[in-house]
Length: 249
Image (tube, rainbow, N blue to C red):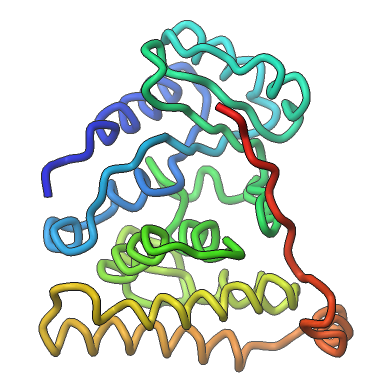
């Protein structure tokens, strides 16, 4: 697959912010593309319509100024309402948006990311990219495809790194939140179901399925907090996720 149109702009934006002393990291489809090998891009690559980034809340004012200096137009009503945790900007020609999350990713579930922003560059670590993808209550095929692209190039490990997915990070967050655990577990199952839809040979398919199964088992076996166990007794009788507010663009 040819490089998506927004990939170079995603990297340029992170570099420009870094030059200005503002740590910004990619999340979403662009982030996973930037970490991917050519083989993974060929198998699972897609165009992405917008850019998603995370930054420190304390950098909000400086980041707003930088984005506007770069020609991005703020969604003023949205930013006035949600600016404590999230900002939205439109490209100069209106063809795509930049969604900025400040300290946390708050959609179907809330993920605190403030201590993860400067672990790696230009993206968040692979474990956090996986969590932001699989926390979606209603996972679609493109998100499953992005998840497979991420798993393709990363070994399951006990630390972060360019080619490592920190299983300990996933287990720690899911072990403290039954709702997050349930959504992630469900979505790993859904992702496993679509593996056969891609043009993989037997060995490639087996390796991906093995990673999904190993991650699922690690989450199941990991210690759970008292809070997790109390919520587990209620189970699915009470909704365990939020329905994100639809952003009108």
